[in-house]
Amino acid sequence: MAARRLRAVLRLGARPGLRPGAPPPGSCRAVSLCGILLTRVPWAINSLDWGPCTQHSRTFINLTGPFTNKRKEYSERRIIGYSMQEMYEVVSNVDDYKHFVPWCKKSVVVSKRTGHVKAQLEVGFPPVLERYTSIITLVRPHLVKAICTDGRLFNHLETSWRFSPGIPGYPRTCTVDFSISFEFRSLLHSQLATVFFDEVVKQMVVAFERQAAKTFGPETRIPRELMFHEVHQT
Image (tube, rainbow, N blue to C red; front, side):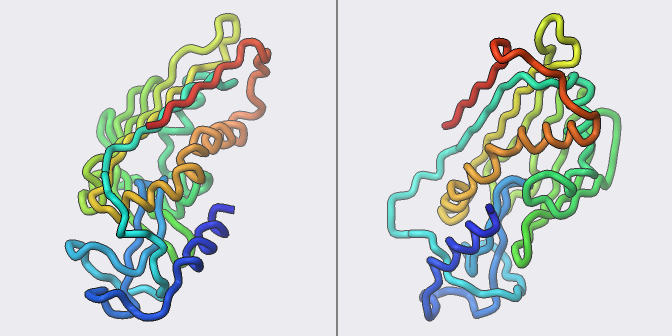
């Protein structure tokens, strides 16, 4: 659904000709939010290098409006019917992200040391593609924190998963706190982030919960009156 929405939006923005000062046909960039937000655009700010691509289309971004590139934040807290250890195992297993994380096509751990992992990921769907590097801090079974180290697109990008005890009397439950904060360097990238906020960011916890079900089986049944789900967005 997200892929169809992206293609429909990009078609709305298709126009003949090129904007003055735009790069030559066949040049484009892909934008990503460290595995969370991305899209393809046919041109970008002058500070970015050009790379070949197989598809050319006009951007749908309106560059005439006011621009405030402020930091965006999203957090979600919920009770899940899996233990802290189980959820930690799923989130910390970066090599498996390509199998279930929204839009993640490749995920490879390139180095490890105690409490830290360096990973390279590739996100998108044809012909959209973006690669990036992430440094991940691991504190078993409490924390998985990732910081994108590529500085071309972001002033700031950080994601965090925290796991704490769940419901008393239900040992195979835990409280999951997921948060992400990010700030793009350019007007173009900042507007693109808004397009995919609902499509991808808000689906992350559900995606990892589904992966836990595939890995560890059915979740613990939690009485409705004990369920908790809280979301904050700025």
